[in-house]
Amino acid sequence: MSAEMMPTDELDSGYDAFAWFFNKYWSRDIPEQMLSAIEQVLLPRLPDRARLLDLCCGTGQLASALTTRGYNVTGVDSSPKMLDFARRNAPAAEFVQADARRFHLPDSFDAVVSTFDSLNHFLSLEELGAVFRQTRRALAPAGWFFFDMNVERGFLAHWRDYFAVVEESEVCVLRGEYDTERKLGRYDITMFRQRGRMWQRADTTILERCYEQKEIERELKQAGFGEMLAFDAVKNLGLTDHTGRIFFLTRC
Image (cartoon, rainbow, N blue to C red; front, top):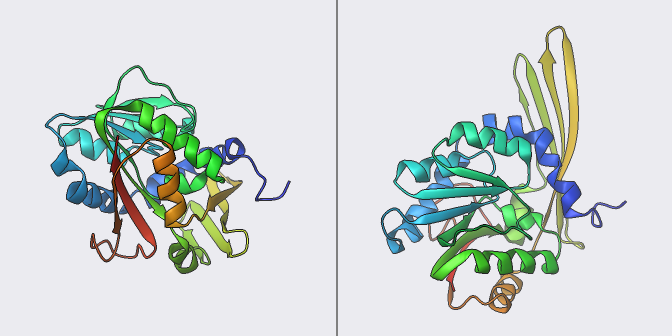
């Protein structure tokens, strides 16, 4: 099966193998920067103790920061291993394993957030539109939706990297590429962890689709969202090393 045709459900399982690395290394700085964007744009528009849904919540560091600020947070993610870490990192939040295209929750929310290009993982406009429609259904009347996505500048800047983390008992190598014709970013990840005298290897692949801003905005409108604002992560929000990341704010 080609990378482009790999179904998203299969991709979700890639984060089970990657969860420990994501929790230990990628969660050091990224949640703080995502929180900075949320604090600048979304939180001033919300009431105290607002009900927030963290969609594609990962290992829960952002949910933890939001509960600490007094918000009632529910996190949704498709990876059970990511949620294992999330429940430890954010014990005051509630977490649900579900697919972002098909989730159904009993409560409605004052706002939904989805950060760190989580929605680029949905590999077709049909899938992205399904996520937007489910998000619209989860929001209370006049609820806010705040999320970010990588546009092509971001893929060109960051998805052709090769880098590694080498520690005494663990190694992770990431090899990135971006296909400009298919608009597809790919990371092949190889991990080694020491278990006693043995080393355990795991391999996984992460794929993301590049969408144009006008495509994203069109899908939002078709899902029933109204006026929207777009913020460049670097120019408008002062985030470092986030070239090509655009934050979107819209509401029902």
